[in-house]
Image (cartoon, rainbow, N blue to C red; front, side, top):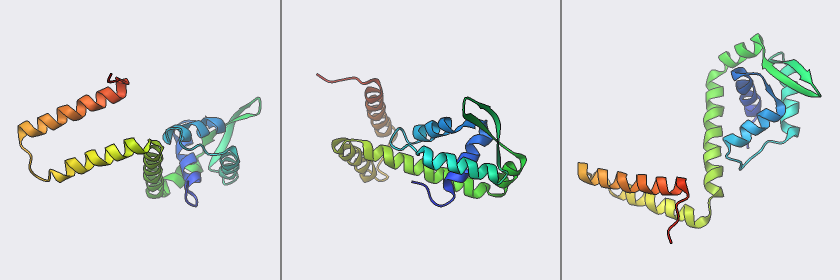
Length: 153
């Protein structure tokens, strides 16, 4: 799911936001992927250990075998020096998450999404104010019905 070095940058960026436990990092990444991907502890914990050995992260608290990882000054410097790579990892992660969520949708829903996108793109530049409002209203009603779980009988 991640390219070489991507997980290291992502974990460091997440603990830059605030100190976190390994399990919390697993859950955050799983949430990023809308439950369609969850990194294994066998990927997360060795990477956290590596960040600690590199001096980029440190354990600030340990209770009951749970380590709380925080970024160090060296870790912050490393992220700052590699901000472009961090942004690229974040963008790739967001794209992968969208693709995973899309692929999790049933085929009928995916086909309907494609048909909608195709219909909108086929309009080209043939839009006027009234038609744009009509289409926007249709899309907003559909989005609201989908989000609310509204059913047709």
